[in-house]
Image 1 (cartoon, rainbow, N blue to C red):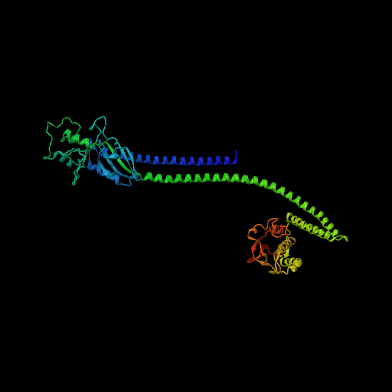
Image 2 (cartoon, one colour; image 1 turned 135 degrees about the vertical axis):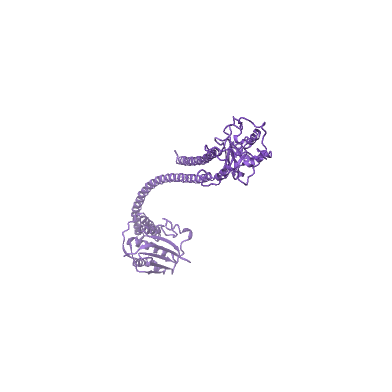
Length: 520
């Protein structure tokens, strides 16, 4: 498989793995949200069970007074430390009649609207509403409105008797008036049942004996003073049929937010891992490619070394015939019968032979491996000696050459250092004009380092050629070989030094060698 296609396949697999992890985290997040909602539903059922037990405890022969039930509902809503509501937050509660209208409510009744009660479960942003049955006290659908087990919520005893006396519709949906004076609830007997209340006052309308049912009927025994129709009308509107709870969704939202952050962090680190794996794969591919290139470069380097040795041997062997040609040309020019024209041509042969020999010598020096044998060399004295060596050329152009600075000794290969100084100084002598000046400076730059600077006032190097001057066979002189500065750089780097070219404003050139190690 091609590397590009293989890389695309790996990146595609990593992206698919990250998408799989992200999808898995989304699914787990939805599961956590569903679990939080299920926990809220379970709490609502626990509250419904509690209310069912309370209503059964307060019920007396199928009826319960509203004034005894309301404090229980208010306490359930207002108590925040209750074990059932401490983490869910019960906001409102209401007991429903068979038509779905609230009979008794507590808390924020705005949350118990008719539209919401039409649904068994309604989720809003900050609350949820559950409509539940009341076990053991709600109506039996098959047995009718007044079947056994049903419970009717009655107003206070005085409101009830007064309403009957004034012919008030006991089943209307307006809330019953609250009595300012408490009415004593009939006491309970030893069996735990409530004693029948005292007979109603004389001014209360009593049903006639002919209309009063006999033999018990569906009314509680202690409410025989009401007609059957009045009790049925009351039971139709105030009989318990269901329960509505409005609960805060703060716990669900908190679980949603915390789990969302957790899943997001997992997906983020999964993405980072996929990205890191992709980068590692790419780096592995690049490393393999670089290893292949290094092997090829090593093979090429070995080939170049062999070629370099062959070229150096060829150059060395070529100098012998050239020296023979040069010698023969000199002999011909010295013959007694040689004409002036022959002598001129012989001199041309000698000059061109010397030029080729110099180029071959420079090439051999450049191609030769540099083995540095460090000794203690007096740098200033070495500079003075090179100046004396080039004395003829300096005097011919009337140049001013001076070596100044600290009398330092450095660690260097003396022969190679002399070759560096000679090449740099001969370049400066060739560059400057008549009556020019050359200055060699030796300066200590640190406790164990020094620098060497050779500056002249010649034309300098054009800016476009300053990056090329150290390359082999690049020269700006007509008679140059192009290997002088390349050899200098090779020797400098072999010693661990650095060499740079600087512009000598307004004219001239500056070559500076740094990091020379001062001898102890």
